[in-house]
Amino acid sequence: MKRLVCVLLIMMMLLPLASCTRGSKPDNTAAPTAINGTEQPALTQEAVATHVPDMSFDPETDNNNLNSGYGHTYCAMLETDEVYYLLHNGYLMYYDKGSEDSGFVCPKPECAHDEKYQNADCCANLGAVHFPSLTVYNGRIWWVGQPTYSSLGIYSMALDGTDRKLMHEFPMEEKHCGNNDWFFHRGRLYWALCYNKVETGEPCYRAEVGYMQLDDFEEHVLYEKLSTLHPDPTIRFLGESAYIFMSYDWIEPGEEPDGDVDYEAYLKFWRTNDITQEILRWDPSMSEPETVYLDETARFQFGTRGFYVSPEGGIYFWETELDDPEAVENRVYTSFIRRVTGKNTKETALTLVAEDGMHYYLKSMPTGVIVALHDSYVQGTGYQTDSIWILTLEGDTLYRGELPTAYREKYTGGKHDFDIDGCWATRSELIVGFKETYYDTGKDHGDDQYFDFIKYEITPDGLIEIPLASCRAHYSDEGW
Image (tube, rainbow, N blue to C red):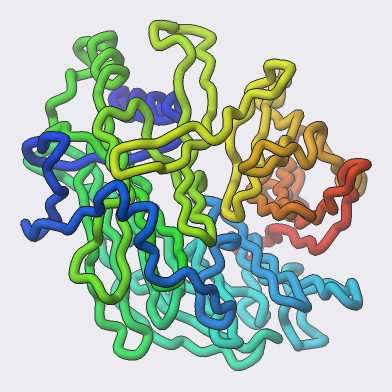
């Protein structure tokens, strides 16, 4: 138990989580090797900047990175020309841009929606959704869910919530019992998975990236790694290309000191261990992914939300550095946005420290518009967000200051938490998924939880707050 707590604390200190591999560490000039031992092609630095075979975007078939760049959260957002689709607490809601109407994506006028405990009759109840799979694909809404406790399923339904279909069901394996990212893109369902594994008697993680065709559902593994620290692989898309983001180390299972025996040695080992950051590109014309960026001496791991691939093929990622590596208390981290300039090179595009010295951390950047937060400790409540910074990759500030939350005036109660579960930004607007939890206030059992989606129009005079949709977690004796 102590070892598990230590690992979790270290992962929190490192902020962006990451991954690791096994085997002898190659020299800096060696090409990466796939899990089956086949050597992968590697791009030259010149080719990294020029080799982008397809940079087109088709909203009917392509994964929209805006909707998948928020990491492991419990809410999702989709946008069409006419409607926002908003998912939280398992219920899909909508906001019509023209009429400004909102509600649940369920055509049944008599339906109780979220007022009934685990309402299986409600068309808006999508069940256990695996994020960030929610996608508008070929004129329908698609997602990965869980038909049974032992299976996963690919679902689709019409945009109004009717005609739900289970397109394919497959067994839930060990590899699905961890962090799972799923993406629909150009006739394929891609996945980036990470789960616990025991290797040579020691616990570690296994990361896997692959896809299945939506016409025959045949599975193909593209890349996999073993890791002592959590890998958290993820994918971004540009045209036919899938960009795989992965970080890992070369530690053999059991190599690290036993924290129960020598805790200081255990901490020192992790603070001084080199981490490899790797970005790979794959498209259907290739037999193996190719490495487009490799750093074998990184100090911090990739996360899941801090990635952006521009329409021109530019690759950006979030990275943090500890201001004083020797500090034991009051450790200060600085966040950077890096730009890939070659296979082994990067440059700093932005430093997320404001002119007044306030340090921010990244919350999202899937569109190239950065949403960064600053938290302060509030006695009795814990860390709460007190400032938000919205800026472009060119360094232009669109807004910095407090996040308006007038919508919260409708909530009253005792001790509670207030969280930002997810957010998405363009140059003109910000959408935030909020969660409000009131402890031991439910009428029957447990806590009251409320979920709100708020749009903020970004103007020269500040943010204009527009509520989009809302739902709640319903507790009832039916569920006990």
